[in-house]
Structure formats: C-alpha cells, structure tokens
Length: 262
Length: 131
Image 1 (cartoon, rainbow over the protein chains, first blue to last red):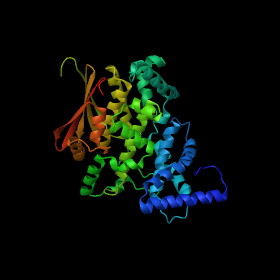
Image 2: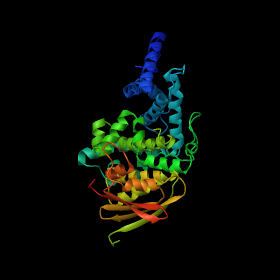
Image 3: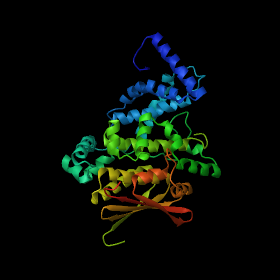
Image 4: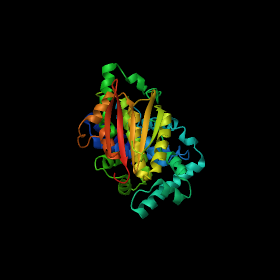
C-alpha cells in the first residue's frame, strides 16, 4: 500500500516500481483494474492532503472526494516518460482540485457558525426520524426535533451542500488545464458537445468507485436515498451531497473533454 | 389553474452563484406542502440539473404551481436543442446516465413545450409521497 507515511528507501523504490507497472498496464494495455488499484494505493495520500483543509466548514469526507477526483485526473494524465513518481505528480493535482472546490463555493464557508452546527446535527436527526417514522421526515419534523424553525432547517440544508456548477467563463484551474472557453470551437463542434453532454455516461468512470455505485443504485435501480445510505453506510444527507457533486463533476468533465475524446 | 393551486413566479440569473438561492426557494415552497426531506432534495436536483444545462449567461424563469400535495414546476425558456432532444427521446438504454434518466428518477412526470425561437420550457411535476 502506497501511504504518505515515511518508509525505507527500498520500500519507496519498490512502491514506485509497482506504480509504474500499474501505470503501464493502464496506459498501454487499457487495464482498468490497474487504474482502480492505483486509485486505492494513493487514497491515503488524498486523505492526508484533505486533512489540511479540514475545519473550514466542509465535511472532511467531501474534501477527500474532491481530492480523489484530482488523483484520478493525475493517473489519467500521467505520461510514462515522466521521471517523477505518481505521488509527486498527483500531489499538486489533488491540492489544486481541493483549492478550486473551496474557491468555487466560497460563499458557503462564510456562513454563520450556528447554521454550520445546525447542518452538522441535521444528519443524525434525519437518520433518527427516518428510523422512527419509517419514511423520510418532513422539514417541520426535523425542525421540531432540533427545536428550531423550518426556515433555519432549509438554510442549514444548503450549508455544505452548495457548490458551483462549472461556468464557461471560469478560469483555468492550473497551468496544465485549458480554460473551458478555449476548448469550445466552432458551431458544429459546439453542437456536438451539446449532444455529447446530454449523456453523462462517458464521464462516469472519472468518479471513484463508491460514487459510481451510488449513482447506479439511484438512477438504475431507482433506490431512494435512505436505502442507498443504509447500503453504503453513510448518512442520507451525505448520499444526497455525493449524488449532486458527482453529477456536477461529470458535467464539468464533459465540458473539459474535447468531443469524441471521452 | 384551480382555486386550490397557488402560483409563484421567479426570474433568476443563471450564474452559479444564484443556484443556491433557487434551491432555498424550492425548499421553502416544498416545505409549505409538507414534502419530505428526500422529496425536496429530488425536486431541487431536477431543477439544478436543468439550470446546469441552460448555461451561465442571462436569466431563466421558473414558475411553481403549488397544489394539494404536488408542485408543478416550469423552467424556461431554455435554448439547448440537444437538451430538448435528450428529454423527448425514448427511455435511456440501461446503464446510460442521461438527463432524461435523472428526471425520470427524481420527479413523477416531466415534459417539454416549444417556447418558439428554438427555445423550450420544461415541465416537472413532483407529488408528495409517491416517488
């Protein structure tokens, strides 16, 4: 397992060689299981980097998810001729993705602490009420349990769940990324892009396995969030956030990917 | 519209900064008809995905017709021809995640109306306690 912890030079070299072999299998042979293994091996790095951004009004799990997108991009873009290790190459990608996430949702991290605390306590309240009532609770029921008003519950729902969908005028996120405007060509190409993005499928494999599985359960099996939450061991609010973020990330990916290249 | 229905009209900028405001308003309207948390989340997601397809420039009109345990929402005009086609087409093949499939999952019914000039209006209906 490739962890960010200190290890002996021999162990580090062995891990680099294993990474390189997996990268070769993925990039030259199209072996997607090698890609999955690379993601798993480097998730501890993502978690370590994500922890630096904890305590800013965003759930650590959400920051980790955003960081994982940066890791996947790094794996997909890695060129085998590079002399650097994957961990070295991935680190600025992961950090860049996290920073962009915070920049895009700047308003949300300025919300009052009381609302952030209410949001944090809502998750447990929804779980308790769902278990007790056998259905998803209403806003009034959540407010009654938390001894607050429905309006405050609605405001708190938005805390930590809001994020920006990609803007065509959004600037590039890093030196190696094109501004979305630069990737849009003439009329025909733009039309093709519109058609392309109507189906989000090509961007699905950009997501971590857990998010893909959640989307599959929601939109293929048609399971409600409450059941998905039970299956994956997360709160319903967290499942909701993951669905929304995953769909937004997929669309963002499609806007960045030249038509026909996905 | 019958006397049992109330209507709220809203014109909102399409820039991402205002999508949270639209979500909040949908939450407030849905709370009035006692929608469950998950039902509110579904309606918010449906509108959010449509607005995401509408681009980031200009504004969009939303109207909410609130009935006994139901909310009918109209979003438009939207100018994306491809979005209209995606919504009018038949069922998405299994395993393919399209805008149509997302709407099929999160609302009880939806439809597309021509608004002239290549624009469309999307109708969504969400019922309490059915989906």
